[in-house]
Image (tube, rainbow over all chains, first blue to last red; front, side):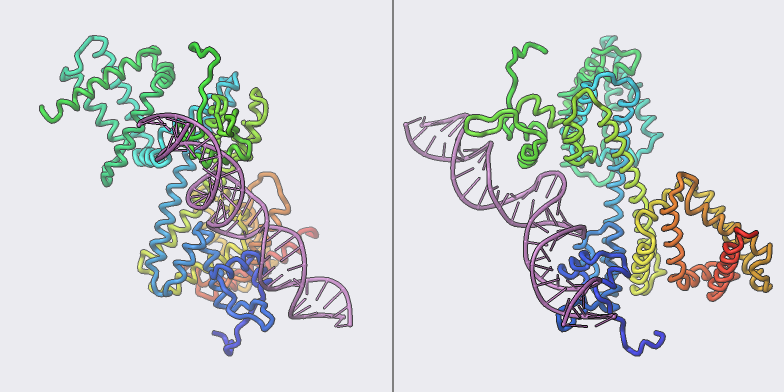
Length: 274
Length: 274
DNA sequence: GCTTGAACCTCCCGTGGCGGGAGGATCTAC
DNA sequence: GTAGATCCTCCCGCCACGGGAGGTTCAAGC
């Protein structure tokens, strides 16, 4: 531009490394996989980098800095320079990926925060209890696989804190209503009980999956996981929950849930007929 | 507890894998590195896992799920069970690490979001321009290393959006005042110019580092990075900035900055004397 | 007791993005 | 001509496993 007279600057690998802050080893690596090749070689085989190579290196480093893999970078930089659609797709995908990872890390942070809370409050006298808590985390995660947990986390974000608080509140209301019906001996096919049940299942469905595209297989697995977990671990949860709800004693929750489940089953068996 | 009579259950490796959702290969790996050893072996060498092994596996999986490395897990599970201080330290460190990573990912997301904005608005007709923008990202990052960028990002969070807006506003005011002094031909040692200069450097210091612990080496590198970047890239930035500030034409900014720098140098040379 | 198929064993290579060292060739300055 | 810096290629190592090869052992049915 300003009188180069066609004489371009060349760099040795060491000079390029110093100028760009990339290690020599990394430059060897990029050369090896063909991502940033030295445009020329001296007679004895030493690399000479041209300005085009320098610019390519800058691009690679920028995209690496965005968290893309070398393969992705190679793919997107290989195409003709006037086509940015691939770049757009790649960055869009990467952004989505980052959103997902952010959600996971947020989950992790709250989890660790919770455990630290257990450790810091002296509510945790027995180390054995802490270890047991750890083990239970793993058990939970065995039932609910990563993708299901991701989905639920996403869903929680979608719903927002306020909605979740409302849902929890409504859940308690439903639980209490069911409790009273149960104590009153109302049969499960009573319209009032069925109304509670309908709201209950609707809530569960609303929490589990939004109205995106329906993926029946996924829904199926989600439900199965929930059911299996509930089947095997309801006892522990009952103890936990009933400790937090005053009007409920330790054996109360299983009974209510059993009552509700019978109502749900009755509803399912009569949904087509009635 | 409920009448085991000392006869514990044993699991083959396949059973354990199915029960916990861990692959067999992973179990081999854990055995190999001594993290979850099969407590027993049959005469022919097949692994028999005991209940203790199962619990150890649960712990390992839970801690892995928190993002810890197998080495960290091995260290913390190796110590006596009644000492949770190591666990506390580990989880604390992990939480800090996650905070850092979260901050980085937030940075990444805004960066990618910005690039996608460039691509989506048709303000970007020339693919070449986009590539150049990419290259400049890398150049910027060459000057400001990861730790410095982390520091600045943290600092921005500390300061908050409002403070930053105020600072930008004050920066513009200072720039305009300096511009007027320059046009008026006021010498750099004039008290008024020196006042502007003092506010300028104070602002820079305030933005760069809070009043945490003073790490002089770090401050030094931060300043050096800023100076070097400014020295080599002021031209491009000038063009960019002057496009956004109406009272400034393309050549204006370098002149003002040069003027200000001379004032800063004069101030530094006379700070001990006066 | 024999067969068969499932489950198990060990050994080893591969992943991604380089780091780092060995052992030798080449450049540059004096 | 020589010394020291720089360069070259080749290769092993990381981390947490995945996956295959090739062989042994188990459990069930006949």
